[in-house]
Length: 252
Image (cartoon, rainbow, N blue to C red; front, side, top):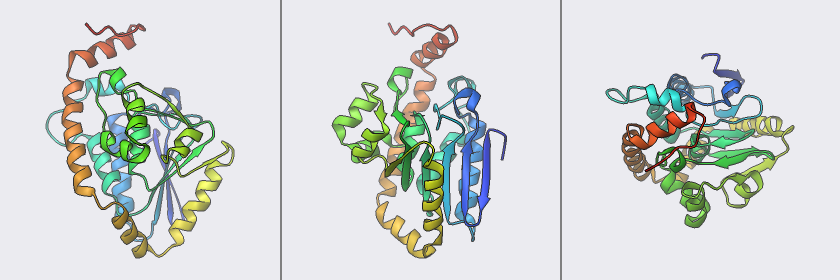
């Protein structure tokens, strides 16, 4: 646990909060490592039966910290972000998202690996990968189309469309929408209900629902290779430079 990732365990429920509000909860590689370890510990626990992810204050997460990613070593061992995506996509126990505000980039794509997704009425959902000189991640180029349909997925991934919470619910990306004030209380009640259910039946049911794990894993690997290649590309370098210089990027 670090100051930027907090963990709270109450009875059989673990609450993970992305706690970097001064940076709109943007996630660094170090934070991904903590999140991956927390998910693995939850999966191995004999007592914890529900895992909730939310964000501090008024953001879920602004996605990857681009400056941190631009300086990271992308060679050698499995990077923390890949460990996190592996952990959340293969976890055998229920993972719940409480989307309390804007969910950008991986803030949206991680939801495709959560079993239950609840949103505050003010939440929005955006995946600006192409705008940043990057490609979709976390098998979102496959899973988002399966969730919302190809036309809407292309509108999000290629044209940069942002969905409101109501739209996300109507398209099937979000399970239910609650008022901002009620979100965490409502999700806590649902998480406690999930945690009180028969644990083996819960795991077996999840395995039946998510039966295409091998296909998803292969797609994630393909996306990851292209994502890392784009991190080293002139396009991404121009995006980071433009952000630091507070100007629009120029792609020749």
